[in-house]
Length: 118
Image 1 (cartoon, rainbow, N blue to C red):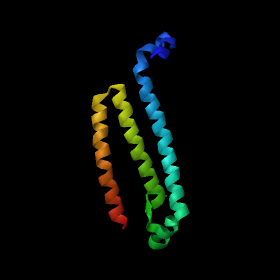
Image 2 (image 1 turned 180 degrees about the horizontal axis):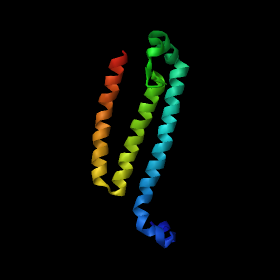
Image 3 (image 1 turned 90 degrees about the vertical axis):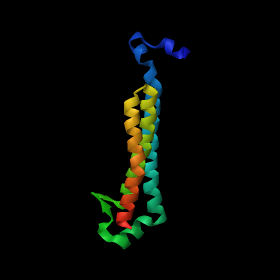
């Protein structure tokens, strides 16, 4: 951590947060990338058209089409994984435990959504 010696004095108390911020920024980029990739895969493979033919306009969650909603779900799930790790690095144990419970619950929610539509 020799490079932290060059930090201004007002940032030194927050040096333990820098790895957490890096993890969080990488999580944001990874989540956006997965969202776009999921939407592209649904479009290229024709699953999006198949769902539209099979369900019609009912294949929506809120205002989003089902493939877009699944992409958002995956992006949020991946972001929460990175957020949980960033919070743990920052040393906030109670928040990390809460996020662990949320991450444990999300696969059950996805399964319920898929059972509802299929």
